[in-house]
Image 1: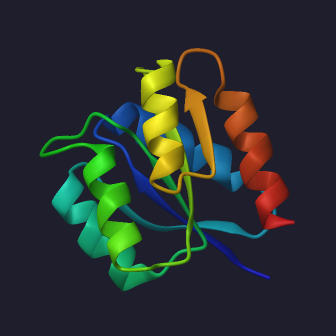
Image 2: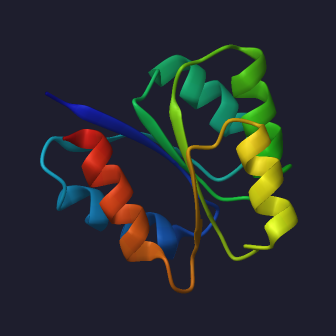
Length: 121
């Protein structure tokens, strides 16, 4: 069964790394990409992916803007936050806005892969 993931990341290098990671997960594919909040919201609503990998710092706006918009649209999608800003207040805010997981870019990339693989299974 296909597992579609939308990537919201403003760094082209990290987007490439995320795409390579998804390539190692059976059935996973990239449903779309965005580097900014507005493009992410539009793309996610159009693509209707199974999951979203979401950075908090974006070109225009932030990941919380995306989470709020998805919540308002009542879109049932698993959102996994991947950020350089893993503070406890950010974790709590992301969870309150419906994020399924919250990962630190510097040392939890493998945990994100595991969470996505478990979701895809």
